[in-house]
Amino acid sequence: MDCCFGSVLLSLHWHPGFIAIIFCCWILTTLCWVLTGIDFFLHNFGKDTCSAFVGFEQDPHNSSLSSLLPCKSTSFSQKLLVEIGNNIHTFIDRLNSKISEYYKMLGLDSGFKLVCQPFSGAPDYSYLPYSCPKDAIQVGDLPKNSSKECQSKGKLLPEGSFNMISAYSYSVQSLLDVYPDVQSLVECTFVKDRFSDVVSHQCKPFSNSIRLLWSSMLSLSIFMVVLVLIWVTKAYQDRGRSFTMCSITPNL
Image (cartoon, rainbow, N blue to C red):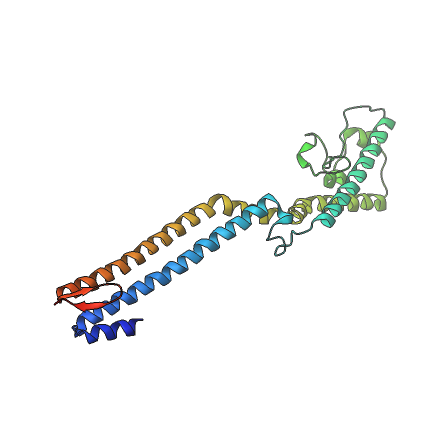
């Protein structure tokens, strides 16, 4: 297009410097349109990406991103968490029952401490670590905890039994320590939090900035086209010629 336009200008015996300026203006105009297309692509890309993030935030299992992320199906993982919660809940319930029976054997019906029960009951077995009473014993501290009544009226345990109790309590406590991280991993909490942060704090500013940049480049591109056409038209008029969209005829 530029070659044909340049041939027309040369055939009209225009000054080479003016032709070079017109060429530079057309190159700049073409560059503006290319940048406008890139900005428009970025605008649509950002809009579609944010829409996908919003869809994942509202319904992770039916989102277009579910096939790309490891959160597509969590039914098996949820069943595994429920099973872990059930086993720990049952273990601590039995342990507290044995503690209550032992203290009743010592003639104490109240005032003794029980092991913290961090799980709710069936069917969910939700992890509620802050629901325990303040004086409850952490299961990992059980081997180190002994009351005055137990020390004065209790009996010594064989070393093998004590080691077994310690191993059980430490194992359960270690499992409880990593349970929140496992639950967060299974529920894709990290991914959801990052997407929520992007949707809440980054999508709107990014979309507004790209839209402003795209509209500015579009306006500049249109302005450059109009400016070049006006400049060429004015140059024709100054040479005593009339310029239309279809023909160039000299004024007689």
